[in-house]
Amino acid sequence: MTHTITNIEIPGVRKCASGKVREMFDLGDAILIVVTDRISAYDSVMPTGIPEKGRVLNLLSDFWFRHLRPITSHHVMATDTAFIVDWIARCGGSVSPVLKTALAGRSLLAVKVDVLPVECVVRGYLAGSLWSEYCAAGGPEKGAVIHELALPPGLTESDRLPQPVFTPATKAESGHDINIGMRELSAIVGAAVAERLADVSVRAYSRAAQVAIERGVIIADTKFEFGFHDGTLTLADEALTPDSSRFWDAASYAPGAGQASFDKQYLRDWLVRSGWNKEPPAPALPDEVVQGTSARYVEAYERLTGHPLP
View 1 (cartoon, rainbow, N blue to C red):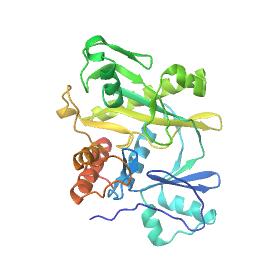
View 2: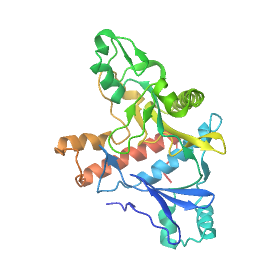
View 3: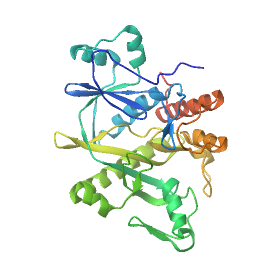
């Protein structure tokens, strides 16, 4: 099996946070974000890493941050490994040749952002939790208003929506994020910021969707995280990766059912078939699932960027 990196430590540098996938280190005026090969599903981190996953997420995010710069500021300072290693050294850290190799392609030096406590979700197609809520509200027969969003009757799973819709969610410390409407979002971040988040999120999604469809990929939905840096609304975390988005093959798209995707849905489907009860600990993943998931992540990168994974 291809080597995976599921943990990173940098001697002499304080790790300030460790998420399901990312490790974050305090480098003075900047934050170093290192994307591991860990993968989570149903709110549990799998004990088995996915080869190339961390590099795909980091390099694909960097690709999208560059494309979205005319629409929104972002937190990226650098992704060049030599520059990052030099910054680490100036902050008192020690990077061995082995560690430098581990950091390559999966590291991002970012400005410090005060991240808002909400997920900015944009949907171009009826899938996932919105499809579930639409069905639960009787939407297919009579239409439904879900979190202030009016959806007409007669829609089927994976239908393209008349226009992209903004469906924010709260961030859950554990369990699933909770979908909310604009009134609830305004109560959390203020009305003016809520309107800016909705506008920028939809424009960023629309720009990315245009780029993707030209390369045969549908972005069914995605989620962004924003915060403020020196008073400027700033896109942070990741952008339009297989972890934060649904990517479908445009050539095989057929509404009326779920779609094959270039993301971790393949893993989720295997977990359901395995009989796992979705409670920790998660099961070890067989080689075919590991390699199949890795292949889908790499394909997403290569199709969207038009370049092989370096």
